[in-house]
Image (cartoon, rainbow, N blue to C red; front, top):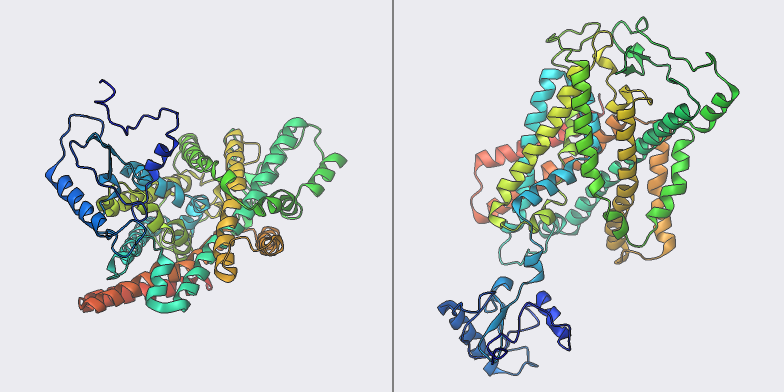
Amino acid sequence: MEDDSRPLLSSEQTGESYSYRGSTDSLDIKTKRPFYVEPRNIVDFDPQERVSAEAAILNSRVHYYSRLTGSSDRLLSPPNHVIPCPEEIYIYSPLGTAFKVTGSEHGSKNPSIITIFAIWNTMMGTSILSIPWGIKQAGFTLGVLILILTGLLMLYCCYRVLKSTKAIPCVDTSDWEFPDVCKYYFGKPGQWLSLFFSMVSLIGAMVVYWVLMSNFLYNTGQFIYNNVHNINMSDSEFGTNGSDRVLCPYPNMGPGGNNSISTLYLNNNGNDTSDDNSFAHYWSKNNTIPLYLIILLLPLLCFRSASFFARFTFLGTISVVYLIVLVTIKAAHLGFHLEFHWFDSTEFYVPEFRLLFPQLTGVLTLAFFIHNCIITLMKTNKHQNNNVRDLSVAYLLVGLTYLYVGVLIFAAFPSPPLSKQCIEPNFLDNFPSSDVLVFVARTLLLFQMITVYPLLGYLVRVQVMGQIFGKHYPSFFHILLLNALIVGAGVLMAMFYPNIGSIIRFSGATCGLALVFVFPSVVHMIAQRQRGTLSWPSAVFHSFLIVLGIANLLAQFFM
């Protein structure tokens, strides 16, 4: 009798012949229709909970449809609007109790805090290394203002992308991405253009990764070689004295130069040896390291699946957190070195307002870029009505992170004796390879990029091959050819133009023109016009955004 009072279907698996019970968690409401048994009480985990009136009405309605036709005839099957949401589906047992089905989509939903940090982690990339350089190019005061304003503009445009699917009437857009929205409004050309500019951002990121991996691998090998051979310091760049040494790799670029401020560390023998010359010949940052990476990364790019590398995405969060800790420690040791010269340059300081500010706007366009995947990220948010709030909080966290790193590195850079002009596009290059804390940062970033690089290549492959051939892996030859072109671009840039600041700003301004400024603004104005709600302030503002995107791209060619 005790067994008779228990639900036939419960969340506990017995491991016997009822292996089909595990399938209830993945119930497809469009193909598996509920069956009818007169309800007595519906239970979740409390067997005493009585059936609600709404559930009884819904059950009677489904019962009515099930009497109209057999299950093999789909013509008169219950329509989708009659079938309840996944979280409201119950499977009734003959004893009058029921098991509440937990749909797979419902179970994969994330709370707001997870969604916010997923956006933060996705947006945080290599651009964080170039923020101090961008602030130097724009001037400290103007750079901070531009970072805040650009973040607000990027947030608004991302909001427009997120809302773009909701403005399409009479169409199920639940599984749409922004390229599908572009296709709806602009046809095939819109879809291909959105794909092209999305590829610009992905391939641009892969090129930057190759340059940085060459840099980090070189400095990591240099650190190990120096310690094995008991060399105190093999760097001969101009820099400061002390334990927290800061370098100026190109001292002549500063006003007046920094040739008089230098510290030259020699090895323990006081001169170069043939072994050192041989090592330098085969371990060159621009000549040999980019080629060595081909041996490691080209085979990884040809993997059919990238699921193995997805397991290491947590390294991105660890790397960013460590960078923030590193910047804090360096700023505490070096102190702040600031003087405000509003329009005139001095020997050690740059003016607060500089005409090179478009270089920062180009970097920030890529730094705040998440528009091509924001719809996907927000689909997993548990409370969809909080999407706008969570997106805003995520952008706030990203902006604060960029401000923290950029302002601290710029302010702590020792001027004098070095000029602020010495701040490099990768601020880690301003620290010697012998610095242990920086060595750990470079090693973490190197391993992170080695695991993320195949993921980026997989995204490029899926989108390009899917559009051209209709399948993600047409053949090994096609994949090898595509990967060879991508790797070749990275190798050439690492060998002949390893300036990640310029690469980031050009790729950011290019992809931002279409996916940040033009497409979201035009789509919004078309949707407003179709609804009859387009006003002249809205038209002027969104037209201004388009002009701003065009100006941002054109300005990169004159800097």
